[in-house]
Length: 291
Image 1 (cartoon, rainbow, N blue to C red):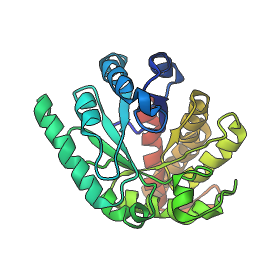
Image 2: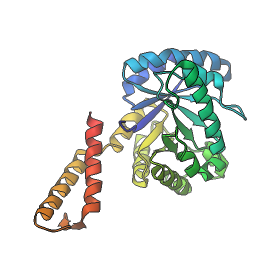
Image 3: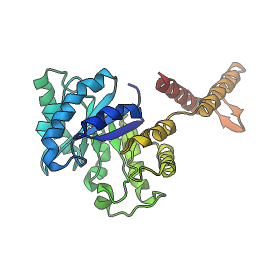
């Protein structure tokens, strides 16, 4: 499956915003039934989101939905409304631990069964916003439905409150959390996802933050504003210069192999099979994103 670099939140009660969001060229939309929807409009938003899933799929727009939860369970009415062949997955806020993911997976299975679609087909991205969920990041990442894991650092957000951290542009306070999420996700073969950049009109700040997340091992980003999509897509895509650099590396290594050597010096650095494996993965990623 093509990697998802950008996940753009869109309020589920804003039908016209959903229609316009496709123009942002986000890899995936997250139609939000939770924080961005006033309580009095939850039912209306659910119907709007349900009605938009097929049209979005017909435009080949990958679509996820963030559902509501009570202190005890995720909202089964939300699940029944959106589960179907046009939904890629569900975003689940504030799980307390792996047991919440197991319960939600069972609820999704019941909805899939009722809708007559393959059980297990709807994917799941938990948003780790409680201290306990962060502590159990590895166990959550290993759940079968889970395809991605989030490491968030929004200013004054749920994660900051849960951990008692302050916010800095440098992100020192979130380094351990994000590193933990990257390791848990990568070990489980899932996608590590960064975010959220709240200063949505500060594109330079966004660029620095996303570059930092990419260097840390993230491969995608949760976003709040359409103007942020281009920056994120560009940052998580190998640049033409990177691709050319790695193509030359592969060529240099293959020439060394033809001469009977298992390593060589390329651009002043020692390279061997490990480096070339990385090079080939980056070249393959660039080709996938171009398709």
